[in-house]
Amino acid sequence: MFEKYAMIALYFSVLATLGWLAARRIRNMSDFVIGGKRLGFWVAAFSAQATGESAWLLLGVTGMGAMFGFSAYWIVVGEVLGVAVAWFCMAPRFKQLTDHYRSMTVIDYLVSRFQSSTPTLRVISALSLCFFVLIYISAQIDATGSAFASFLEWDYLTGAIVGFAVVAAYCIAGGFLAAAWTDMFQGAMMLLCLVMLPVVAWFSLSESDAIYAGLQAIDPALVNIWGAGGLTLMNGLVAFGLVAIGLGFLGSPQIFARMIAIRSNAQVHRGKWVAVTFTILASFCAVSIGILGRYLFTEAGVAPDAALGKGAEGVLPQLVEHVFPPWIVGLYVAAVLAAIMSTVSSLLVMAAGSLTHDLYERLLNPSLGDAAAASLCRKVTLAMALVALALAITVSVLSPGRTIFWFVIFGWSGIAATFCPMIILSLCWSKFTERGAIASMIAGFAMTIISKFVLQELDGVGEYFTALETMPPSFLFALLTGWAVSLLWPTQALETKYRTDLQSLPTQPKTNTPATEQ
Image 1 (spheres, rainbow, N blue to C red):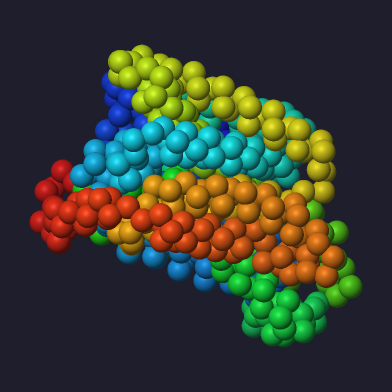
Image 2: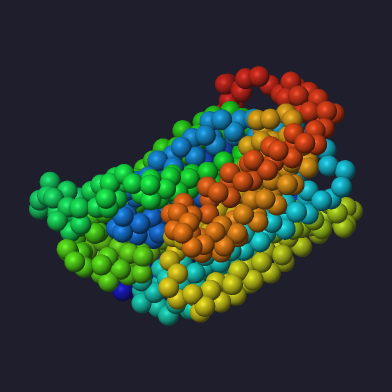
């Protein structure tokens, strides 16, 4: 046990050091919210992917691999497609436009893109974002308690509070820069641990070529990419729902904040290869860990929940204990905490910055100075963290049967359905209007809740919506609503202005990047 605690102590000391170093560079609101737009491509890419993955990857996706077998690889397909489209197709134009508009946040970009004359767009965007961010953060805090309980046999509540305290401390001190730097470190740790575990586990098996036959003996559905029964309507919907998880990368503010903060468009074009490579390795290895754990720790007739915990989310801790000595187990405890804290820190800073900058500073107190704004943002960060902690504890009491995978997916789907269709249309369609953007946000927000709590409960069709989960119907409804409203109430002046903005952008990114941008 000493080795585990020593590794965790070392991990926490690195976070504290990075937070302290970042705090020394915070001089104004821009530094606190977007790091002064000084991120290089390595930091931006690792930070974006670490933020997008979270404990959902190390505990949730590994558990899905153990539960579903080969069909869980549809998650990998969706994530890789989503990340590739976001970085290759959307990020270059988004970066150019946010630089052109001098945007500090994603909401700043939207207001400038639509030339908003009223605060409606800014208010709806900020409040919608904060609502789902609180759910998403609370899911991560919940995972912190579960991680400490699984690895160190701590009480759930104690683990949740300790994890919350650490991440809140370095976020309040160092803001976005602390979040980005720690994300780089934590993302590297996550990737190393995810790749190392299945490789070592594979070579530790005396008969590695018997895995396929062993899985088939446990349950033939485990080796079928479509699941039990092969390709059926229900299995097709489940696969589509898993692939659709990747839609959340197409404009979610916590990820696209990194596109704003990256130093230049040339850095975007370098970062895209890092982001896609990270995603392929991390998500593929996470599913593989679950599959190997199912092979090693279960047998025919034994439910995976019984052997591997609720939602099979104990498969990674069990496989680590089975393969590695105690001091490396401590490294994996730190990796799980890294996955959680990288997401919590990024979301906290983004949401606090949105409330402080997008609402209070822009609408209520435009004369607020930079130093005062940064100070207020720290206080808002602490307040939001406390609310998320209270929500996590409440959910743990009211829903003891929850799993990390689906808890996180609800918050992820809400953010994605509210913002991603709007971001896509704003970048790709010159006729998209402010009314269309507002309607799209409201539609995505509402349909996320309706899909989860109404459509999935309907007799006869509820099981199909459950198979799809909340992302596909919510995302599609928001996209169609924004398109229809923009066609019904067009704005010719806005269309002309946006075309002019696009024509003023550089047609090619810089290729000769100074050494300082490496």
